[in-house]
Amino acid sequence: MLGLGLLAGPANVIMQLARPGVGYGVLESRVESGRIDRHPIKRARTTFTYLAVSTSGTAEQKAAFRRAVNGAHAQVFSTDESPVKYHAFDKDLQLWVGACLYKGVVDVHRIFGGEPDEDTAERLYLQGRALATMLQVPESMWPADRAAFDRYWQKALDEVHIDDTVREFLYPIALSRLQGLTLPGPLRRRTEGLALLITTGFLPQRFRDEMRLSWGPDQQRRFDLLMKVLRTVNTISPRFIREFPFNVLLKDLDWRIRTGRPLV
Image 1: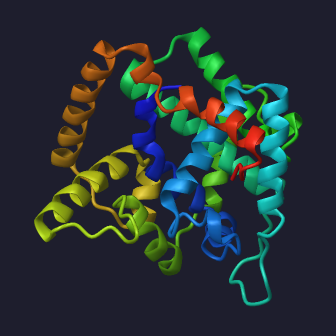
Image 2: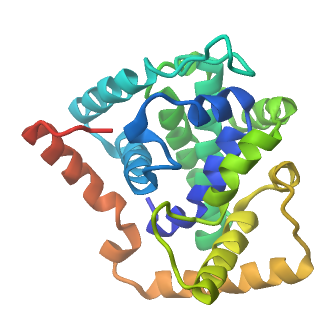
């Protein structure tokens, strides 16, 4: 997997949480160690490890990571006070998350590797299926082909809605704002402005609208120029750099399993 894909991470989180059951499941999560608003680096490591394990892990790695994720998900369910009903074991919600991850993989490939040919597109689609079926989603739920996925996606967009509460939760993620890290005012504004440009650039327009993020031709040109520069740098970089950190996460997972450390 391409390391530059990490740039699309905040946008993909927003896409996933745009489904109210996922948004409130994360916002109200009782799993303190996995909260993205309080432990963004740890949560990012868990998510990126999930991507690596789902697509490239051994059967043993997948089984160990599945047990760890299920243990955390067992604590994520709505209460009588929750505005929407949800449970982290909901197959429909898990399918939506997998679909968002797949969309992110394809978008990253298009931006940094060009429009995929038929063989590459099919390989990416199989990766998407692996991302969705790592947990409770049966393979029969994953759309049979890319055309079927497009139909699923268009229908699933009807369930997308970001209310004020979830939007307020997501906005610092769009800025890549780290809790506890205070930068000088000018530097903070510059770094958060750049992060917001990247996040908004990776978001489909429907999700920009839900987040109330403005986007126009000038922003699109700035985003395209930045991606062009990064694509050039990525092309001339050694393979190890291009694939970092995904190429070390499976080794980290083995080390965590061997030493008994938490996996998520």
